[in-house]
Amino acid sequence: MKVIISGGGTGGHIFPAISIANALKETDSSTEILFAGAEGRMEMEKVPAAGYNIVGLPVAGLQRSLTFKNLALPFKLFKSLNRAAEIIKDFKPDIVVGVGGYASAPVLWKAQRMGIPTLIQEQNSYAGLTNKLLAKKADAVCVAYQGMERFFPKEKIHYAGNPVRQDLFGLDGIRDEALKFFGFDADKPVILSLGGSLGARTVNESIAGSLHEFEKNGIQLVWQTGKHFFTEASKLAEGKTQVKVFDFIYKMNYAYSAADIIVSRAGAGTVSELCIAGKPAILIPSPNVAEDHQTKNAMALVNKNAAIMIEDKDAKDRLTATAIELLGNKSLTGQLSDNISALAMPDAAREIANRILTIVK
Image 1 (cartoon, rainbow, N blue to C red):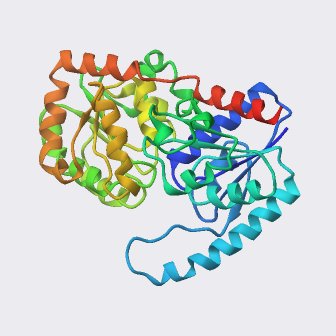
Image 2: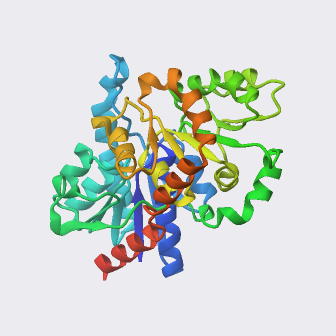
């Protein structure tokens, strides 16, 4: 079997895609998998590091501000569609899987017009316009949230969950190892702050404004900043042994295991990882995403008393007090942990792999 997996742009798209690829290989080791990503994006580094081949398309996203870069988009899209057709003709896939991100649309669109089966993996609770349009000709749409018939044909929907990295299972058994990795004291609480793989300015600035209070309260911090805030955060953390700063965390299983609570954006991939980790979470949804879908992702947890949400505009004022109060409330942390764990879907990658196999057969 030959499979093209297209998409990327952020860790929230890339790591689920790699998990699907791994599940396919576990089911049948002879499966050939080719990734298609966007040139210059992080998938061009992360996918080869996971042991898979990837080809790049010149596709790019629309800039929200007025810029000359937007004028080049139609040309990049035209080139990407032609490149997608070449890739499909050369590789001859049995199916094309789209996981979202810039490169997903051109490859899926071309595959559908060339009569090749397609599967869409929609990660968010609010589907984007591209997936809604492509779903009309897709063979299946795998979703992670209930109620997605609002966006997709009901007969094509398969409730599978979002795939997560395999190393996030069994976190309790590596806590001592994780604390040692970060050089932390086992008797002091740990906050993990995640801004997504590309960073999140509001989350980072809110954490920066909290450092003094965290230090005063004996709180240890694992701070994943993304590349843009890393230098600034490193300077702020100088001389603070209880603060560990990373632009990107390669040992995410250690970070989740060490954490007592987690501060994070509410991207779909991250939310699924939080459910597997089973840790109390404070979610600060990004307001700069299509259809405000991160708020909808966060509310899916908040409505089940499985997380706390702070709006982006209130984060700098409320995060410090909320985090310190949560750490001191063992009843609430236990409740949040139990409720978020109940929402976990640990077999998502295998479910999607099985659906791919069913379509091909």
